[in-house]
Figure 1 (cartoon, protein in one colour):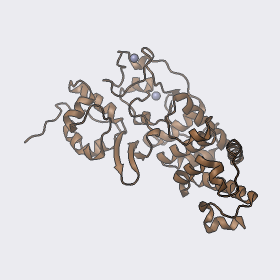
Figure 2: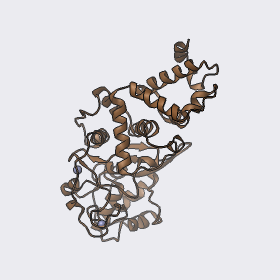
Figure 3: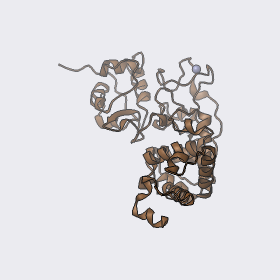
Figure 4: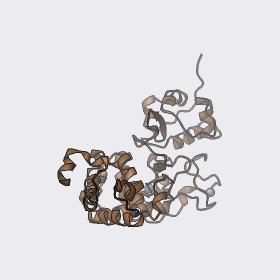
Amino acid sequence: MDQYRLINRTLPYPFESLWGFLMRCARANHYRDHQEILQYALDASSTNPQVERTEIPRLATYTRNSVNELSQLSGISREVARKGREWKILGEWLSKSTFLKLRHAPICPRCLQEQPFLRGAWHLAFNTACWKHSCQLIDRCPQCKRQLALSRRHPEYCECGFDLRKSDTLPAEAEPLLIARIMTNRSDGPLNLDSACTPANQIENLACLSLDGLCHSLWFLGHHLLGNFPVSQGSALRKLDGRETRQMIAAVCWLLSDWPTRLNQALSKQIALNSKWSGDNSTMRLLGPIQRYYESHIDSCDFRFISSPYETFVRQLVKQAGIKTRPSRLDSPQLELDLS
Ligand SMILES: [Zn+2]
Ligand SMILES: [Zn+2]
């Protein structure tokens, strides 16, 4: 039996937002909204915003596109054994929902003027600027002041009817613009990444990371080390608003501009804030959530520029305290050498 399909085919743009693509499909075929397409194509419930990678072939058939054309869209999800849920944005998999915006996402009004579709990069929680127009992304409708929901019917219109292409923009600061460029270098590059706010070698270090690695680095350096939060709260992966995200990014660029001196200062400050010196297993206790986040996400060789000064600092700490039981992370032969 023939499967039902949409009558009018809508072609996806490279790295387009899956939700934005479905909005355009819905409009071209006179559906109420994109949830209605998902209901017909996948029997999806209207409240669940996930589209699984395994459902892409069915969605491709329904929308008259190839699986390849749909697989490159941003926002597809998958479940990975022992790791949990991941989301594909700009062709890479992200491991934390904190790094994403999947119910509400900001827009660049000037990009929408050029082409009214939702860019996949706007799903990235730490992307707060448009690399192309050097302006801040806007996450609320200027007219009704509500967050821009991805459940709306048109990419370029708010649910209140306001034409988002007419929104005013503010110039972006140098630091968020740099991070926007590093992130969208994947979809729109190669871009010029030079910036006065961070030394060239550090920009290179950030640009070499995976998108997930970049998000973890920003979170570790900007939120855990320099965030204005008590250490106990710093460990929780919670969503930041636009202002907090820009602060976090500015903090990372500040740290990297005098590296590793400022890293050492930040670590010393965290220890002073959290000092319950007990003499054994001390780094874990003193650096608490910072050390735990480091061990879970930052200590692979991809993060050498962070891990080597970080471990040097921790080694000195251990040495100064004359601790006999070293934390397990410091047991590698290479590190032993420096401890002698
Ligand atoms: Zn733009
Ligand atoms: Zn509105």
